[in-house]
Image 1 (cartoon, rainbow, N blue to C red):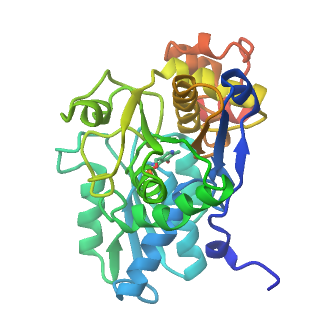
Image 2 (image 1 turned 120 degrees about the vertical axis):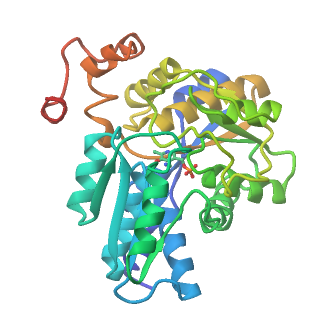
Length: 343
Ligand code: PMP
């Protein structure tokens, strides 16, 4: 067959990249699944496509329909692309603390974006609940419900997991990932454990998330508060995460995440967002603990361009007390787009 299959046909089958510096440092093979190379630019393209295809297959979404989602950004971006490709209207409800780049991108893609105040999940005006109500009020609309719609997790069990298995020829000792909905971690862990139960599956958890305590001690309780990471860290067990075979959780402070992001940029040549940083930081810890000769796989979730105004802006890092972890960025160094968005 020649030619591509459009947006949907370009999702997945991403490269597995060897991270040279951290592999040499640990004596392990530390490999990153290059999810930032999906056509919509993130790991969430897989969930977005799977959720829409599942709704179509069930007859819940028909020609000219509307897809509504509450999302921190990347799922919305993936959904907006799939909606454009298939002629659906896309409505996104987004908490107002997200990066300007993701908001602007959603608008550019033609999604209808509703920013709402950032409030706890228990509040009826939390963005996911607003999205659910909005979908119920619109004709021929579905609420894609990425947190509890297990088409999300299933997509990773069906695609991401088998790809990692094939790309490592089954020689994978550990898999490490942060959780937003938990779809990536749960789906990949479920598949890999079905091939070899000894493969260690580890959650990388940021400050403010309750999953570190939940996985390690069985109680949902926040560890620390306020992280610069976006799209990960949660306070409840989603349907996607429920029952997932996770062996252990690691708590990673933001300083370590920022240092990891800058290490990836300067030493690996990879310009990535914060969740790739936390994943690689946690993968290094797992590799150190396993010892030389092991293979640790993690996820490079999205690209750095979505975070120019924050993670790659020295003033912003200073405000967050994190500039010391990004020494490669010279004082006053910001790119013009960052200055424009911050102003
Ligand atoms: N990284 C980024 C950049 C994301 O946007 C998300 C999801 N919001 C994740 C990681 C986590 O993925 P998942 O929802 O599959 O847990």
